[in-house]
Image 1 (cartoon, one colour):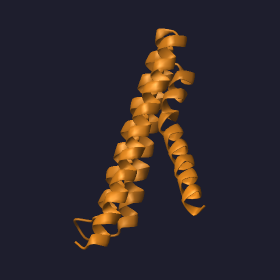
Image 2 (cartoon, helix red, strand yellow):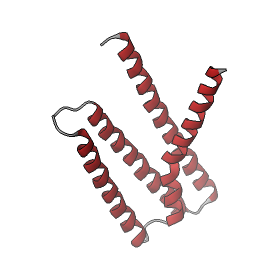
Image 3 (spheres, rainbow, N blue to C red):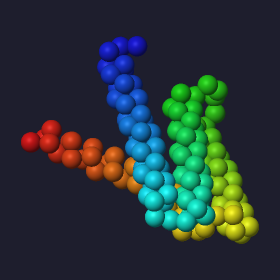
Image 4 (cartoon, helix red, strand yellow):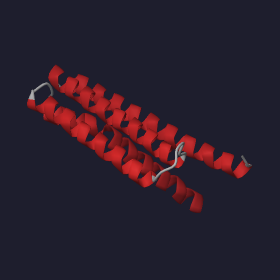
Amino acid sequence: MNALAQNNQSIETRMVQSLWLGALVAFGVLTLLAIIFAPWNQVLSVVVGGLIAIANFKLLQRTILGVLRPEKPGSPMANILIKYYLRFIATCVVLFVLIRMEWVEPLGLLVGLSSVIVSVIVWGVLQACKTDKEAV
């Protein structure tokens, strides 16, 4: 591997690591706020939603890495779409069962599910600010 490819790989690795760290921090902060301000069933719902979001984020990462580094021939786009829709359907079924059986509160679940989204938005804003400072 040449130096440019190693540098790009380290940039990608750092990007994924910072996204992961951000997702875990957002999950921790949302859980802590729920513990402080919400009843136990809302706390449980935030934790369950956060775990579902983080698991989906990890599976998405594995799918994308599999497409970028294919081990077997075939259409990478078809592979990623099939895995994406299977994961989407499975997540919908899990969420439906959790809400329908009233094991979690919908609002707390939504707060937990938003942990990865919050981290991605914050990461994007920080990257934009960093790029803006570098341009000046």
